[in-house]
Image 1 (cartoon, rainbow, N blue to C red):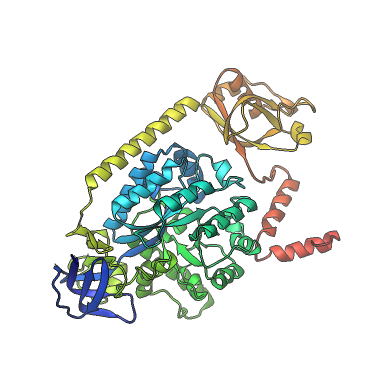
Image 2: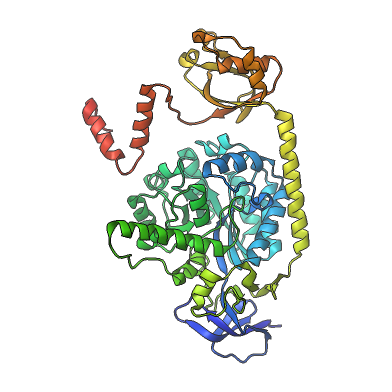
Length: 592
């Protein structure tokens, strides 16, 4: 039997130029598909009265780590650097499949409640093969339209994010593709969530890109954000590896060079911008206008609810305000008018809907109220005092509305929210996610009680240089965090317990102050912190090690400072190439 729904007498913003906007219009849905958008439609159908409502396509969130719903708001003041340590290296290793299910279910329902009908779930929490199954089951149970992006495990920051040698497991990705995504026509589709160059060795990057293309699934990757990745030149590296393509979404893009922007545009790539996170956590300015100026159609995404709200209205305003503020300031400084590409309220609605569908590879299916597309529809109560009276319907949505105005949500023709209330079992979702929160916090407390003590940062140095440092003896070198059994400050050559050197980064318990009082002068006639930590170990206090993977400069002497300055400068796209040419000329070298 044919299922028909008729949305009657709403102010329709179709986001389709051929359909236009209808100040008073009807939308007819038949078996999950939009069949007509007209000023008035007569049909034998269930009628939903849209008088006083603004009817729009559902929002599309093109990048969200949905698994973090269980730890919502735990990192309100975090920078991106903090996030890697506090979330990926602290909470993520503790997640069970049950935690992933609870978070994905609650997170997906949060989306629906806020009028987000399509979600790209960037799922880098696949610590076991059961984790992706749990994530996908939750997405399916929620009723949302979603692209599940299979990502790496997160059991060790050092192993997975610092020149990682560990590729996403191809056999399990193939299993998931075959088990859940035999067709690309369903409510759920699949992508691959990759880490990219700088975070992984090139062999890992190449293997992950090849895996995605073998399985004919799109690729999504974070690039050009924050202090570290902002300087990796990730798109340039991908270009040099021959991996750029129209199947890839680039997230953030805050510090792309002009050349990299052209590479993305010329290769047909797409862009996802998370403006609230980017401005708040130090990723960089959200480059919405930069994307537009390069002929791209940027989309918006939430990213992490550990730190920012989970609704699209926040993202729209964060991007609109930040970009206009930046451009207004630049134009004031140059004493010139603002450019024609200045963001408008209407463009922001486009960015949050049809552009999002384009970026997710689903524009043929959703993103606009176009006859023939699947019916993903949201109705906002424009009679509420925060929206009424309506002069400009698009502005009312982008600059006035909030989650409280989201009255009706339809996904694939199915009503998910009616009269302002989700039809799903919200009580169950809340219970599961609260139980997950409690379990994760208990696991954190247990881990701290088990490990306790202090933490020392070490780094591998060439064996012949180890005697120049404080050196550690450790029980096991296979993980990111290991136990330490001894510490020697600048041992005689040949007597080094290992080539793991202390690099001056500590998290110390208060016990160290008492130990320092009884620590006499050591090498160089000075009281050495290394000797105090060695005494802590000797007295039985738990002391652990985090092994730093990557480069380091010793800024304790002028030579080290100069090396760091040169190394930093050479990585800059603006003056790095010229500095390199000058150094080659100055030193009489041959530039390879």
